[in-house]
Length: 148
Image (cartoon, rainbow, N blue to C red; front, side):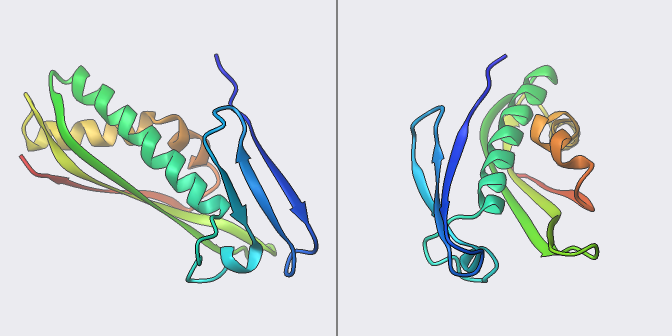
């Protein structure tokens, strides 16, 4: 199976430093990162590990949901997935990712609302990113809206 790679170059202290994360495997992009922007409500155009995890989780989940809908005899017509990843203080010190909230809206031909919701739950359980995060966060929640 493939291995995907990213690289970060960092200069300076945690509070005054900054860096760039490069999506090395794909060469798709390089993004600025900084701890003050990571911990702030307004990212001001700077990404964070949490945003990158949210991107990974939403795209992985969308793929898993597409597979589960196909397994249920459906064809995804329109699916939109959001992932909110929360950075919070860690009681043991420092910070941790405390929660991930997945939101899925959409519909698929060939399945009803119950089938869509069952596929959504199966995708949450089967998504490789969900599996990777499951032991380290307090909760991965799922909010499903069937729009068919």
